[in-house]
Length: 438
Image (tube, rainbow, N blue to C red; front, side, top):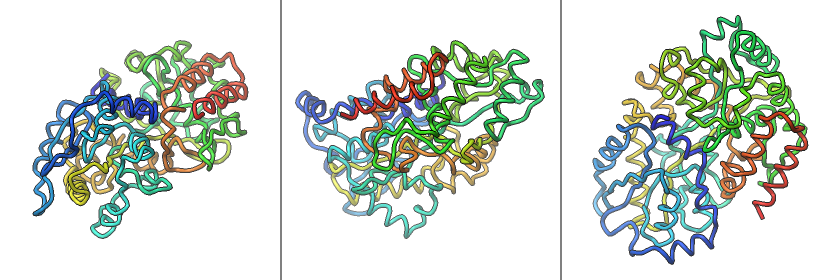
């Protein structure tokens, strides 16, 4: 996997390590050492390796160039590795030795907000309404950060689940990018005739893309896993119809029989070997599927489901502020500076996910990648979070119920195995999720 796809794998897992709740946090606090939070005249900014080797050095340079106004703290930078990052954050935040500002796992802000550790971003966002940053965000991103108590974070980089196809194989099969479920089934059938799979993905160890895609098809049909009360609501007509469709694909032989065991590396190998003609992945797929196929990979069109709806799943990664800071005004001032100066992370192609700001997406450097332009133009406006169909805002217990959890993995592998019925599999998933929420 590339550095970019490695980072994405952890964003997809969100912040599972914090899911142990208050008891785990208390234990970590008892085991941790050290005092003081953001630290005197210096404010800590912790960021993750979101891209390739160029990302963190440039990110650090941007951070250290910050010149605060008189009386506000300067910023110091620390890159936090994905390995054991959940324990790193949990321990530091519980012992008040953590950052004042950080990125992290996709639901991390909501986990820590539930523990009373997050400084809500409402005042910051109000200030951004005055200087133009607020209106620069892509549609729907800020709403995904909203909780009943306030905005837990601000959107940072986007991890999406979209369709890809190999244009040479599609031409060989005599088909074009589908726009409906019926058209997609016809594409799969045509690809099978040339010995190629049309439902390319994986759901093996450490690979959660398969479960994301099943949820995406539910959302595409107007369904999803949670209702407006933030309770699991899996066994709906929309979800049953979506999973019956996937089962039909599997039973027709349009999905690789080994898909349930495939890691991300296995999936990339299948693209490289031209065994996948159409499939589902993140925005960084071409970076991993190197060789003579990378240039043939094209972003597909969003499908319209039988319910007449469009939709899919995405993960709006974010940056959060903590109550433990040398200055809340300092945290907000730094983030204002950072968002006004972070464009080079994308324009210099450091491998970070898709940008949250329209001004970055409008640069000539970003527009040079036609696939990324298509993702933001056609896919981003219709994508939803795990909270669909009941809402757009994330909430704290998503991480320990569906994102990278055993019940979701078991459910996905059972569907990809083709030996279950849709309603029965969804009922089992519902029961398992309810058990985790208790």
